[in-house]
Length: 330
Length: 182
View 1 (cartoon, rainbow over the protein chains, first blue to last red):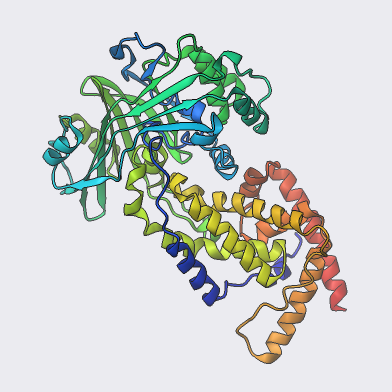
View 2 (cartoon, each protein chain N blue to C red):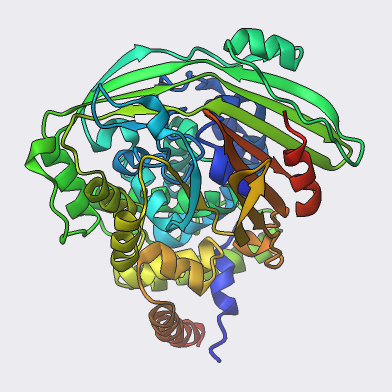
């Protein structure tokens, strides 16, 4: 094996003065994040956050016409899908965010405002304008640590088909056509208040997130399966799987859940008689330095729907106890 | 936790301020990797600092987009760093690549500093002879401390291809290094 120790000679710690000045400069640039109308939009998905087409399908409240009945579009099922984290990073690096991928024309209809920390779930209910469910079972000494409420948001964008084609080309996706009929289409996204309750005790943490299903209004005639396939491909799903998923899913009732790259298990579960999904992630210990030095803590995510609500419970308790907490939420 | 962020980060993106403290830890952990990536990539200490600053400034401006998938944060930074390096070379096509990293200040005594400076200069000259792709791989491997697998994911090359190129490149550098020592 080639001795490469001589190549280590160039490594140096950054000059402390440089490190300190750069950190201070970054801290000084505390400009607020851009409006978050879309930050809440692709509910229950982070990996797809940058991909607008995909994001439209990360929750099922898609109205294909103004006449459609909302109850047709409630979350009833969850479909886990592995996404390519490198693809998402690529999208980020090329600044292909939600606001830029489909359109340059984004009209903020309602701003969510900053999150509000409140004293109790009851106060959160008042703030959010909805009833707030709480867990009645809290193992391992868990107690309420904090409650936050995120505001309602809405935005409208006008689709630029040429721009979307360009994105597909950038990603070397050349076998899918962007329907010309999509050009100029107006898409409305509306998200409802979100309540997050955090419970903690010593090293144990569990956070319960709940919200009404967000809504996306698309013009009549849009082929959801076709757009869904496009979104899956943008997320990095391989072509055959994307096509199979796109055609088999009921996009009106199925919440597409990007599975974290460190997930070790995901399976369908029943929570209070409703379909749900349980994802278990493992900690990883990769060595001593650099990437190999990172340690991720294991965790469990339980997602389920109940009526017009979608719930998520995340924490580091064993999955059985997380399921017990989820079962006790009412 | 990463899994939490991966699924709910977008939904609870407004909670970001509560986690801003993570940036300090991430900054401390990632700064040396990015800085050393540039040291190997462009060589010059001052330019490496400038490009490191540019990388972190871009990341900082986009932090609201970041999904707090902390396990992937380093990769994301290096995606930005690669683009920053590419832009740097694009702007400086008419400039010769760095000569050496000898100007980088060090902490050792004068004798060791002299010896080290000579080593750095020699290594810098060797790296400057590499084609861009090979040099980038060396920078990712030895500067950013990435595994071949991580490099493969970042660059789009296969892992075996990364290994082969690095093996060949390092062997060539080694030969030049030993020859220079005579």
